[in-house]
Length: 341
Image 1 (cartoon, rainbow, N blue to C red):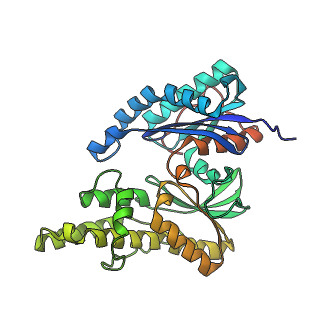
Image 2 (tube, rainbow, N blue to C red):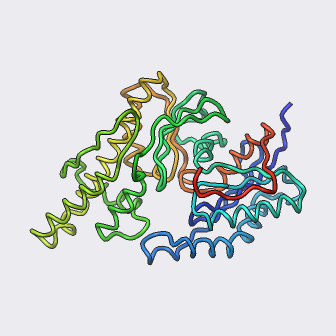
Image 3 (tube, rainbow, N blue to C red):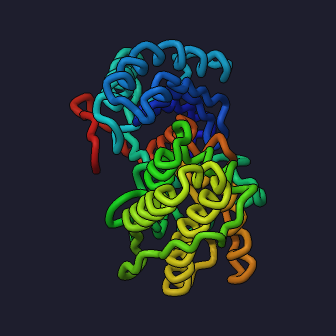
């Protein structure tokens, strides 16, 4: 019989957000995120600054998560943390804190794969904005972030099969790099999304890379945009300013089309109609809308997470930890953070 009072403290520190959350079974009681503004002036995440900020934030973030959940630390059943992938220095802060706290409380320690946690966020109560259902196995998940772009077949809480991935840049990385080309502030993906709403997505045609199977490539698209901008700016130095909305919309349309074309192929081949979206880029409004349209065409049931569960957050770590807890999958105190799985 499942214990009806499983409380998990989740800790997330894979990149530049320090986050802690408390779950009660599949319900999230608190989800605290401390963002690091220091990176904006550098146009990207500076690893050394990120790890230092995690050290400064983690104690207060964990305390606030416990207070917001209205529980005491001795009520915790286990502590789950992001082991990787991510920035090693940042991961080490969360790993060390989780190990120390679990040891002091004499409770289980649970290591979590950051990407798997993005997928399992769909099993948080009330996480889906489309309906109240949760995915049924097997389902496909398009996981799109700054560091990863994958199509995964999810067979169970413990069985994740990667059937497609990027062979070079991740989609989120391409968004941020194109934003930088256009002189937009970091993080650029969200800025492109906003500017694109006032642009023509078919004004400037960019080509989609031809890659085998269900894999992706965004390096060529990024380079195509760069050469296009250089060529047009050479003729008109005000080209970017005069056409910014259309450039953003056209790039975004091409990137999203690339993602959904491969997702359609995978869904047909696997004969699966439950489709989920996960990762930081799943917050992109155009991707969400195009997925809805594609779902109507193919009679899919789709699962799109609330915004707070798209970007890096500890609620998803707590949820992944909950299912590993039920499976008795615990880590030892010898475990170490890893930048890549």
